[in-house]
View 1 (cartoon, each protein chain N blue to C red):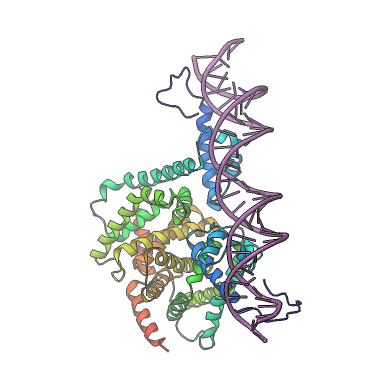
View 2 (view 1 turned 30 degrees about the vertical axis):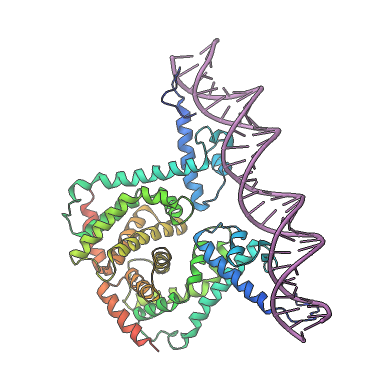
Length: 218
Length: 218
DNA sequence: ACTAACTTGCACTGAACTGTGCAACTTAGG
DNA sequence: CCTAAGTTGCACAGTTCAGTGCAAGTTAGT
């Protein structure tokens, strides 16, 4: 069972327990992705455990969902921080930054598919909304800068445009999970779609893509 | 209860029964939109009926879902036929046609939101896919023409691009149902988004929009 | 006004699922 | 090897929901 910080432990927790916990999170992400109402039994079995053992790791279903959300959101937000220091203050041009952000996120988002679905509607939608707030703010600031600089379209309100850009990225995830999409193809498509919604023509978008992604080979 | 074609009717069915049936479909569309797992009770009540009366109109839950799908798909496909005679053979330029198609569809799609969600995943996803096939073929043909004519982007396979365009339209529906969007705003946003994914820059897209929608005032 | 068409409320069955308690078993840490 | 940590299977309670039968009520055709 989960270690209580005040419990007088006579022995360290077993190593495999932690692994099983991870397995459950993994299984949950995978299964809930295709059926958000899947039973705990299905998830437990997919993780190689019994339903009963599941309750050794998570108290309730909502517990799992919450964990899953925070888990995913943490990864996303960590990605944001990774390279933020050199472009947060708005050094590069907004188009390139949007491209870079999209590409970076793509590699981190097997999990977001679930979150996107959960965010879409349902009981705990607000939970995810909060967890993803940093990302949303980041996008919004970027869009604002893009519009101010005359690079992005100015015929749609910034808040709306930000959400549409977000949706465009999710659409690509959708396309990927449904019709197959390699990592490289997906990254490219995310960038092109997102730039398209931002207002760039496909030739411009292509230029930005090549310019940015070769430069960003680190 | 639903009239059986072989039943020896002694009297015409009551008028209000048909109205109630419509009310159920309407309520279902509205409620399932925000919660696809909503109970029949909730739907029946929203329609102003008792749960028990619901079963006088639909035998099972799946029955309702199927009806709902076909209902929506029929509207969509009817919209396609409406003005098809003069542009099916590819007279106008693809950009304008895509804009027009998007705008036209927008006015018909309160119902499609449900279908989109149901299509997204779930047991009966194939059902909807089939029902929407005509629309998809139409879009795909149009995209093919746009690419051939050098108007649309050619850096994404036609099939994929078609699906992404479809997703872009649905994203706007999403935005609309979640953050409020008037008919006029929505129509405009659909067109701009769709053109953006197709590869047009926002200035071009804007030109096409004004050109097409004023002309299409009929 | 007569009566079929429709609605309602209630009670019930059956299914699926969540969450718990418990005894027995297996595994890994010391 | 010893024992706590973790797992398993089973039984059980509680909930929610789909679907059905029936008796009694209301509404709208004719």
